[in-house]
Length: 378
Image 1 (spheres, rainbow, N blue to C red):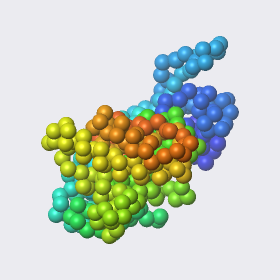
Image 2: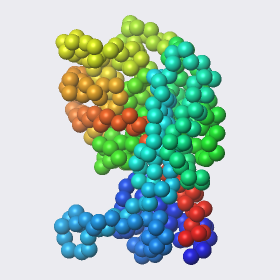
Image 3: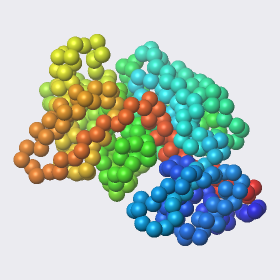
Image 4: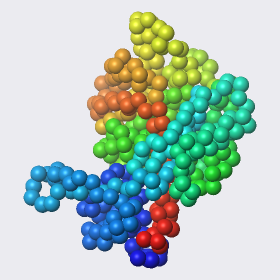
């Protein structure tokens, strides 16, 4: 058609493609609702995309309401028309994966962080990991649209920096610009808990929930609040560092210098090897940690009462044992208050969950411009 990327067609087409990549397969009617345009506009936009092969029609599905009318025909993007790179750093490991346009992981690796790694060594290994994963994915030139990264600690409001506690036993001002910007595509960063929450909201257990509390427990502990489908915060990169909520005043000394923080009582940094324990010993350890974590979660729920609390991280492999202990601890902190008792959910095991969420966040931000620039050839 040779239309300008700035035309109405170019803008709507870019929005359609972005939604199909970052959210899910969708029919024309639903796309019109999501994008707030007429169904006729969507249909006119979709036809050239179908003819060019950029999108495809799936098998028709019955209308959910069971009433009269045409069956829905879901639309999907051709898998190789665009790729996103997702990566995340936490105290114990570096992860990276490449997603195609159907949100499928086509390559991915996890590298353990050595306890003696310096900051420079960490950044060098991170860059090597990203280059290795991209090489494995064999992404065609010009098809990598963006990089999304999940970072630990307090992520800077501008730039790509964070302040975090590394396994070598010290706090570090870590600037991720060198490994992330070396690829020559736009970069979006956020705290890891936001990236995991984006995964769960788009692809996981809370994809139909408008409001929820998300907890991520890995080397540290973070929390994110979502209300009416959006993160409940004025700063999109910063997430709740609830690991440094003080639970017991006379508890152990935390990395922040205070005593009794949730991080030192329940994070992966201080978790003994549960797999090597007998069941009774493991249950005792989990109970103590659930009591600390339950107190922290209950304090948040006294302010914000969503219908669901979602937990991800180191306790998920032991969810059968840990879930009832955590639910009991939260209930004990409510006392006689007539508060909503939310559903307590544990996310599925997925190694690249934070990296995938980071990639999809980056896609939502940068794919509209990426696709708009390519509409002139359709």
